Image (cartoon, rainbow, N blue to C red):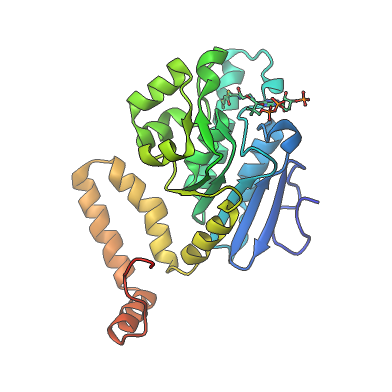
Length: 269
Ligand code: 1HE
């Protein structure tokens, strides 16, 4: 079983992926635990299709992995000899798939456990929020395997942890455990083993309750503003903010707060 028939998900996903719908939240599971969820070409193409054709009404996605590990990265069994042109095409296929995650229709929460290595870390980096169970660990074994990242890691990982830390991971094979990954920005949350999916679903539920325009602005405007020229960023921010606050939904939500119908901004006890 990969996809329930009435879920609205593409019915041509590979067996290495399974998808489930819980109201406004979709769960995509890397389902090849016998190969530690290594990413072969069919899985990468399936990820692209899944995020490209996310059904209407899905407002958040939780991505996780079956078995003991989130993902062992590139399927090394498929790393046959490719010439440079074929190698570029292969890398571009990963770029396309992961772009659909980062700049798709709905925020994505990656729930991480066990190995989050190589292409698995590149996949996780394309998500908007990462929840790590204590068992999670991060590495870029490409360095010791004589290759280089090819799934967008050179672009996304320095933005999370800085060029110096990524350089160290690649040159020395350094492995970060979950707690250290939290400290350096690889994940935003660490939870106990086995609690990741519940945490991911809780966060997805909150995200799905946001105004759609807010989620759009955070996914599509924020990273471009943060990485671009500040002058253009202030302009884009002003426009985005004006559009968002002018929506009926924003007005209703702000009125709820003024009328004491909305929750206050206070930390959990
Ligand atoms: C695999 C892969 C894989 C496992 N491709 N088959 N990634 C790596 O360099 C990580 C390589 N994998 C490992 O270090 C370990 O497998 C793990 C630490 C992730 C898990 O260890 P363990 O003891 O639970 O499993 P295992 O016994 O090593 O592997 C179980 C099976 O999964 C075994 O196959 P089997 O047929 O002998 O049972 C392994 O061969 C298979 N397997 N990992 C293919 N990666 C866009 S560029 C990205 C570049 C990269 O990602 S490079 C990093 C690649």
